[in-house]
Amino acid sequence: MRTDIHTHTTYSDGSDLDAMITAAEQAGLSALGLTDHCIVTEDDFGRRAKYDLVETYQQRREDIRAARDTTALQLYDAAEVSYVEGTEARIASFLDTADFAYTIGSVHFADQYDYTSRTQYVTASATQRRRAVERYYDAVVALIESELFDVVGHLDLPERIPTLRRHTTRADYDRVARALADSETVPEVNAGRVHRSLGRVHPDPAMLDLFTEYGIQFVLGSDSHTPAELSQRVPELRTLTETLDRSPVAAVLRDNQQYRDF
Image (cartoon, rainbow, N blue to C red; front, side, top):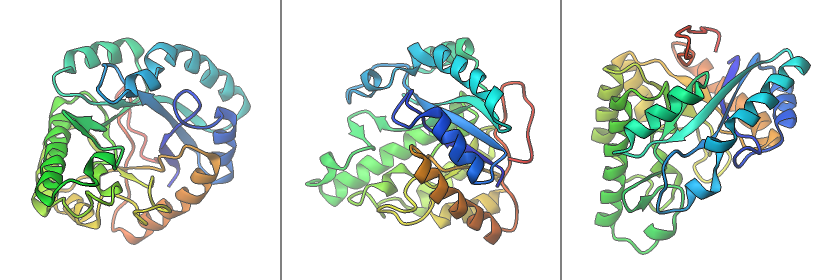
């Protein structure tokens, strides 16, 4: 593993840019993707108000340019963009304007469901939980088919929530894999919960088996918000790649170059 494609700075809910760069250097990386949360459209959960990269990405770009003079790391000016069905045209227009090096598309919410919090599922029935999870995968497939993004991030996010965990089925993973096989969108293997409640990278190993079955390559993201997280998670991703029969590949950058050393 030479590149961590998924990290956050104070331009969303992460840490100081220079501190993240130092952690990446100490972890032996060659490149770092800076992918602060970017929410183009309003939502019912207040995330648009919380993350304002739509307004601040140009200032962050200046900070990244300045940081390039102080590090040998390749720094990617990228973004993690929340996908909302029905707003594809607005998202596409913004991404054309922002011209990020690459984008990670993520489903964080869909309709009435918020997949970043356990609150609404605590008292839900098994049927209601399954309905929420099924809606999530509907949105993930739509994200992939939209071809708006270079990467699809943490593509089984409900697994992070204990009350939704194990409500994903093999059929859910299979339809995501089939969508990926027909798309230029690359999936991410994400270490965001490897030392927390999930205790492993995700997607689930069943999804990784389908990656192999369908010939799907992927990228590696620590989803780190602090230097300590990056330092702890990168070794976990390296260990994962050592157990697989093939190596991950780079995200497709906006200039259509593929960097195989990702």
